[in-house]
Amino acid sequence: MRLRNFGTVSILATAFVLGACSAPQAQEQGGPPPPQVEVAVPLSAEVSDWNGYTGRFESVERVEVRARVSGYVKSVNFEDGSRVKAGELLFTLDDRPFRASLAQAEAGLAQARAELSQAQSDLERSEKLRESGAISVEELEQNRTRLASAQATVASAQAGVDAARLDLSFTRVTAPIDGRVSARNVDPGNLVTGGNSAGDILTTIVRDDELYFTFNVSESDYLRFMRAEQSEGAVKAEARLQDETSFTRPGEVVFADNRMGDTTGSIRVRALIENEDGLIRPGMTGEVRMNGSAPYNALMVPQTAIQTDGARRTLFLVNEQNEVEVATVQLGPLSGNMQVISGGIEANDRVIVNGLLRARPGVSVNPVAVQLDYEAAPEDPATVQSRPAMSARRVN
Image (cartoon, rainbow, N blue to C red; front, side, top):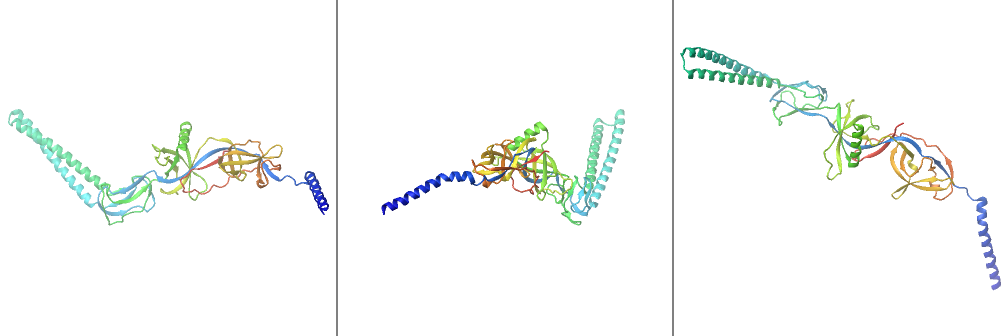
């Protein structure tokens, strides 16, 4: 019984050794082929970086239209929401009380001039009589004083006429600037108070042929833009509205605040944006982008080829022995359907762009070369979050 069991164990051990020895030979002769992957060299192109920011449009000029005198509204001479020119008539007030005041002031001026003429005649007679000794020196000086007083009275009456005439002109309320007028706040027949900052606001006018776009930038972005301004001149900007997919509204940075925010670490910047079609209204939100770098040559790969390993970003490369290698890369901005790689690969590296699940570091693969195509993907509509969004555009 024991000898029979020993023979069985010997036969099994011999079969196991022979099977182990023949396995490598079977793999060498008919094993599975290396997995197939698609590889491509990075796309090389000249790009320039752009920084995007969200913010709000503000009017360059805004005026609250008030009457300079109090009175009853006689007429409204504009359409709500229309464009007006500086000096264009907006409202008229009842001018009859002001005409009466002007007539009264003119009558006072005429009386003062008559008194002045009489005082001049009296002085001339007094001077002749004094030569013959017919009047005293005291009487002569009195006539001279009356003449000076009459001259002052005439000047005061003339000022009264000028003031009355000015008040009369203020019954015609005109546009102080070119721009778009708001809705009327009063209708004909209403009494309005004017002449001070607490007076009734009749309407408002904003200048909208160009507008300010106000936004916040970080300290590093501010330094980059200001250095670019010192070396290249004005910093160019392009804006778009929330429902627009392209930046078609040109402008330039015209203002940066005089200090950084204590808690935000950012600084307020203002760009002047053209509004030729008049679509933008003050208070609307949008997005602006500014050129953040001079054109440079960049290597780009598809976004899908990038692997994430914790905080690292990697690419799978195929070396000359068709083995997979891992390259840690530094990412630049997005450009269309491509990701700019700012460091970690060379222009002639073969990057795995398809078949990543079949690739493992150190494993042999069967690389199939493909060509990368650049597509200028449509930009997303503007967002309202206050954050920078980096992007890159091809120069050619």
